[in-house]
Image 1 (tube, helix red, strand yellow):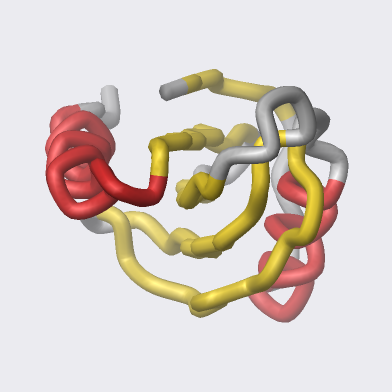
Image 2: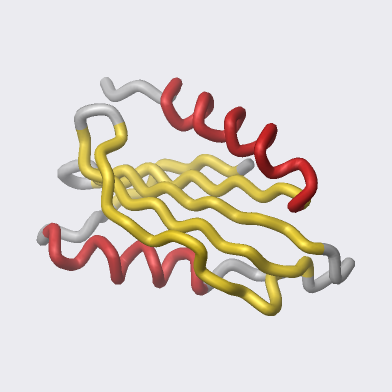
Length: 106
């Protein structure tokens, strides 16, 4: 799991989906990628965007699942990515969500 806070965020709500898609499109190490879910959502009290992928690890060829959440603030965004072997996805996704929901806003 990777969590980062970055400056800059789309000013318009209509730009958030494309922004989130561009973030995950640049992720190295994935091949045979298929989007399972792509939707706007609320993360806490702030707007966010979730994308889930099924893919293969470019290094090992094993099946993996990926989730990306982007939580948008006024001048920054929180970028959260979780990657798990497909056979452990249900357990991993629950943990990833707990981490996402545990990140507070100051």
